Image 1: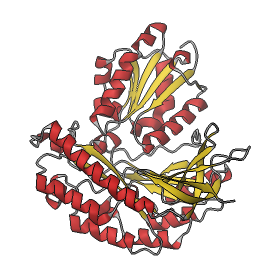
Image 2: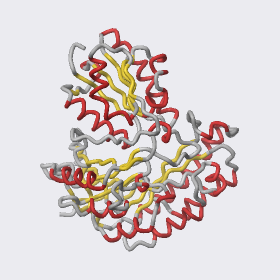
Image 3: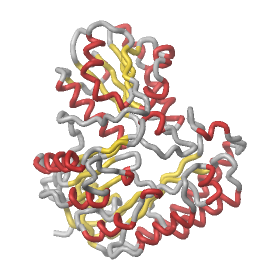
Image 4: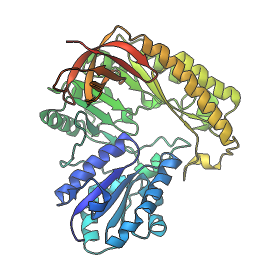
Length: 439
């Protein structure tokens, strides 16, 4: 290689984004320098996602778009879920790729890079589900100026019928509570005041030392000096316990927001999805959250058009929206993923019908959010600043409930990302709140 510069593009979830922070730190420790465009890089890396079909296609389109750089001597690496899923087949689709590494093998990146630098043209880092390793590193390059992420559990043992994650991320393996708290203290010393704990199923966390439950770990992170906000995502209903709600009530630094994916409002569809809970089971957990002393915001994920979903079962999902009254819903049409049990199910629902159902759901949720958000008018909320648009004299940020808030700021010095400001809410929009700073 003519030099040691790299460009990294990330696709997908917050887990991938934080994995990229750790990959960047590892590369920099190996003497590489990050650049912000493909032309300036010797090594082009794509940290990939395969949760949905379009995300996967986007990776191969990007590789095809930039294969022209291969003639200039640049090298390519595919990381993450698509790398683990496709393995050495990536070399066949894109012969100019030199590195294919799944997320469970990131701890071996220094070795993989050295092999590539030594002249190997096809270097792979692919681990099966039996790995016990987690990707812990002291060299994380934290790129977010206002929020720090900590992965506390990797992998998934749930095997939902539609989901590829158990096959690309490996089995569930948790970090020790003490290592998580050590990292939280380092983050606080760096000046961060908000931490987000991450995991494919974050509340499935099991402390290898047996010292702390997930709820106890939440409390401990929330009590680290200097930390003002703690978030966590994503929870699974099967492992959502009442003590999680109790600790949110008890520890003020834990944000009053829970993301609890339901996927469907129909018990029969949930059974087909292998979610291993019923509608009533899910609603019981919602009742715990709604009974909390603090008003806890709720968001969820929903799949429409799962194989065999009838119009009546889709209607059960709509009635669930009405019953729960979510503050945000992330909804998607079902798409078949490689290696998943749902592949053998008959997906007879036309795309047009899936699109119709998705739009019905989004329209209903938009109305629910309109009503929910209007209730905030007149309230004063604390907002953590995330950005500033000088041309509009407008600051953007989020409330503790994870709701986007925009507010006017006429002062000459813009508030710094990560700072906090009280805001009186004066207007609402379908997906955000707006107001004015309270001096």
